[in-house]
Image (cartoon, rainbow, N blue to C red; front, side):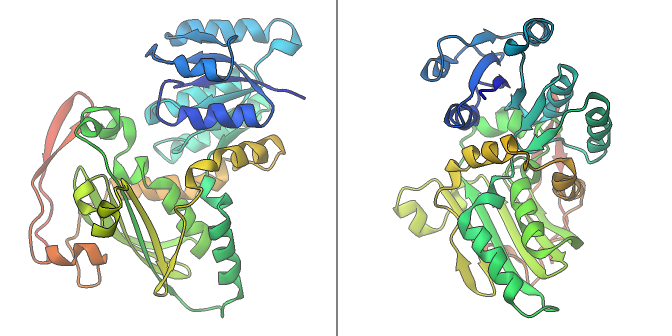
Length: 341
């Protein structure tokens, strides 16, 4: 049976992966929303998609479909809008009798999960998150191998994610903490989910450095000690990656052994959709711990760089990084990080 989809944020970076997943699972995009009208990509998937630049008209059209013939009703709403809109768009999906498939992060604050779960019960529909790393074969193999290792030991883990972004990043909604949630939420939340999925819940967390382009810290998980670093500064890329003219570097090292998880990273959305359509999608309870952790990191004061920090921070030990400017809404404020030890 073909399902009808609506999609929000269709003009954004991540939307093409959702459009492809909808097509590849045999379904169709009926309605799309984006404040920008640079959405010619829709023609690659359908010439019949109704498009709106105003949420009010989009809402009215979907509601009209809900009250019309059953075969035209929207079954799923794919949410690709800026992060601060995810919560509202998920509530919209439930209200019009649809399930939601939402890009990360589902919400910015953990208490927003409670309200969505109440609405799920009220409307009888579900909100699913895109946690594609849980479907990556190399990480599934790692999880299986970890289960075979002796219990009761802590693994040493080093996670690095560097993705090159130009000046536009900080001047867009992604550089606005109130709209994106900051680096830990915008580019890190699915890595934090991955770490907890592999090594268990958080026992302790510390932030060593937090600037507008780089954030790093440590985690004590049930079965691992983790040093992590996230960056959008291409100057942080390893020389070999720069030489190969690659803009992104992903690495997870477990007990000194590198685990490859760069390949097929961008091709997992179709698998996510297949799981949702089969009733095995990742629900609110699954994503809640990573939302809580990202929230806690966002509000943590940097402690400085300890001797056992992420290897890429070692050259900065004993130095002060900052001050730096961070956008909050329409204003900016200066952050003065701690003097590093």
